[in-house]
Length: 222
Ligand code: ADP
Image 1 (spheres, rainbow, N blue to C red):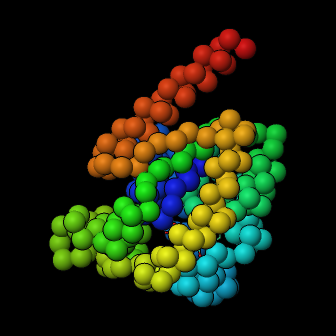
Image 2 (image 1 turned 180 degrees about the vertical axis):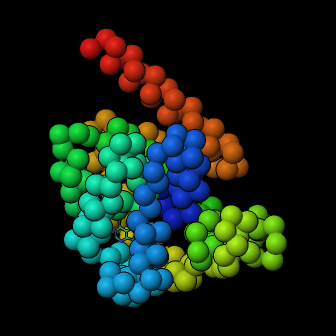
């Protein structure tokens, strides 16, 4: 499954919930890249500057990283939820090639107006160790220390106003065309990302369960 949605749409938060509920690995390219930057690997050093500025890193680097990740055992056996990939048409086409003859089951577009995401990102805080997402309105229980792993909870380095605006422009230019790409292939499901985390999670849960039911019915018919 692929989850699309602009920065601050709640994509990461919902993907973590889905991953736990359906026991499917959550593959977030942003989280993977931040881990590479933190570990100062060759890939991390190559990606760091672009990330800080809110630019995309090159298709070839990111495609190689995802290809390696989806070949691991957990993804082979359980499938995966992709968050942050694909982000360009060329990445979407590469993903199709990687998976062929299999296909992505469903693509979810989490829809939230830009005025709302700007407010959400300004208040977003993230654990530097496990990447759990908090906000000024929903802080960790104790002194900006992550409830899950004890890591420090801070504002992301690329959540500056300048980098956010750049990422939103790139989203419209590079990622919005993917909506049409997946619509033409009958994969696209639109879900409103407005309301509480729980309300959005319920909407997604309903959609996925009804998809699975339909798929099961089709498989028994065939
Ligand atoms: P956001 O959705 O808030 O922009 P992410 O955590 O998904 O944040 O990604 C952070 C940064 O990592 C992006 O701004 C970009 O520099 C890089 N990145 C992540 N995924 C991709 C991708 N598929 N292609 C190119 N760059 C990516």
